[in-house]
Length: 138
Image (cartoon, rainbow, N blue to C red; front, side):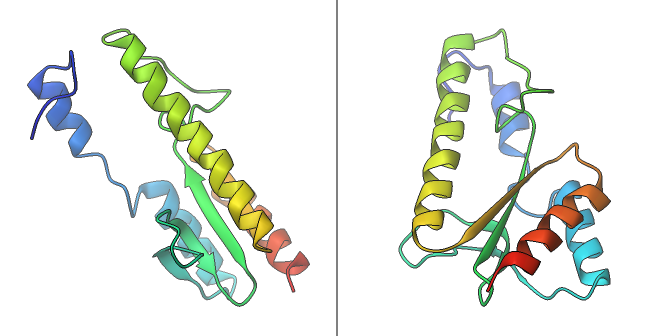
């Protein structure tokens, strides 16, 4: 594994271990939705040919749920900005946010409802957001 420009090997190794699927906030939300009777797919691309996967997908209702991490998706309340290699990280995180907005736009144009919840939101609040979207979906 090669380190990012200006990133030491230890930091690069630590970042590579970050989970992409099955994070604690995702698991808690999935448990709560399942407890409420919802059935869904996990880690699935909502649209054919779109290489972006939603954390939770309700294909019949056309609802895609993303549980966004505060660091990786630049939460307005909890985002942190690395000081080491700051320019690279600023571009990386801005790219993540731009990709999120592009994904939202593509899914919305295709008739999907996109629900984004932050990892810091309480599980009940996040589940309520998803539940409202499901109630409003056809």
